[in-house]
Image (cartoon, rainbow, N blue to C red; front, side, top):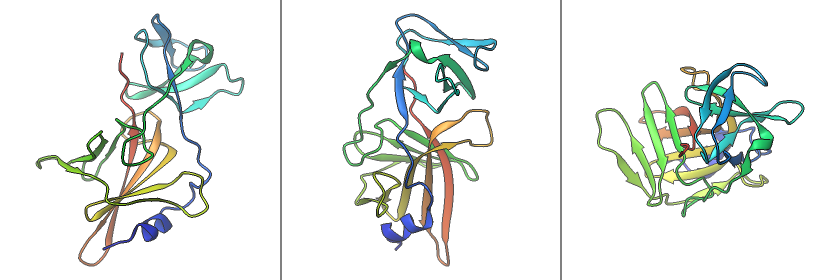
Amino acid sequence: MISIAVALGLIAGAAAAQTPVYFAAPGHALTVRAATGGEPIGALAPGAAPLEATGFDASGAWARIGFGERDGWVAADALTPANVDPAPYADAPLGLVCAGVGPFWALRFTADGVAQERPGEAPTLETPSASAVAQGAARWPLALRLGSQIAVLRPQACRDGMSDRTDAWTLDLITPGEDALALRSGCCRLPVAP
């Protein structure tokens, strides 16, 4: 069985990562643009939250958010800071959804534990049996033992290669095999509620 310390050692380079910043849209529809000050591509519903800011332009006037399967830009001064509750068993955002491909898998951070989904299989729910952060790191990366697997979560911009969207979190899922460890990586986001 792989230890959490070994898992953290396998996933390096994120010790200085900052937790994403979350916002709520104003009480009216907010235009989302293709680029800073560019063409409109849609609008956020009034009060939509939580919006993960995955970047800001050099002036700080525009925030990059995920909008559907692409990135969008919104006026930063229209946003209100929003709090995101942590999961009761780890310092990870409650409701965070992580997904990877080849083969497809998904993890959902629910109030009862981490739900794992794979095509053709019934979802399983694991309550993390242990968690740890990298030695010397402020809060990240975070490793969670999920049965025989280790999930390593860190706030790091992530693109899944299937869309043009930047997500705020990266998760590596380490699974022991007969002769070696399998490492799968995926991107994570908090679903936006209107």
